[in-house]
Image 1 (cartoon, helix red, strand yellow):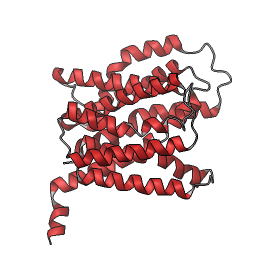
Image 2 (cartoon, rainbow, N blue to C red):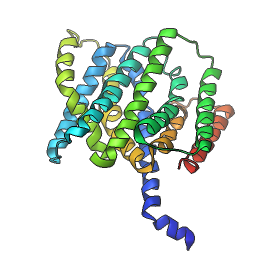
Image 3 (tube, helix red, strand yellow):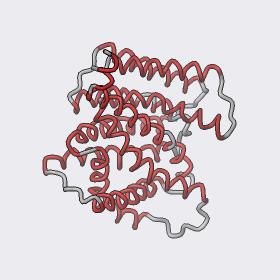
Length: 298
């Protein structure tokens, strides 16, 4: 009876819903870096950044008009600007630039640091106060992901590494700020308004930076552009911000530790690539760290 009572508790249900939404968001985001890597082989990274923001922004504008959403309050505009600078411009641009120097596999090192960055900004901007044990699990999980990536024999490139580190900081801030704002504005509304606010800058830049000809652009590059525009820039955030707002920024943010391993699962399933026992072992250990972080997040 006690267990049933806990399951029926609105707070428990909201937290569970937050973890489910966050999990879906991470699944969608897991394809972002590989898709960006494919796209920058044929598109200029700056054009890719502004084009994906423009496409997503126009879709977001249609959604806001269709559902007749109220405009955000004046005091919410600063937070929306931070979200736009962090996840609409900062992370996409910095990763696109970095992926000219490093492989998408190398970026796993930095994805492993994203949950820590998100949790830190959750404390600074979201007012959260996880228990000390939470940070132990968070740091351990990040160390496992980074250690796994380094064990694959990845070579360092200073320019690419600095750009990826800046991208992670920008993304962590954008995640935390958006999650905080989602509590009052709504998850999909936050990313939609942030995209729309960026349109007056993104549309002209897309026009001026666009290549003189798109002849010779492969289907893979176009599909990658579509993926990062629709899914990475808009749909993924609908689930992600809602999950962070419901389950807690620091706690649900730890789900990002699983992102590199979703790529391994896809590779094994779709491309029939071999997944070693070591990979499975690290994945299990990371899942345990996520579970521990969740338990001690409040």
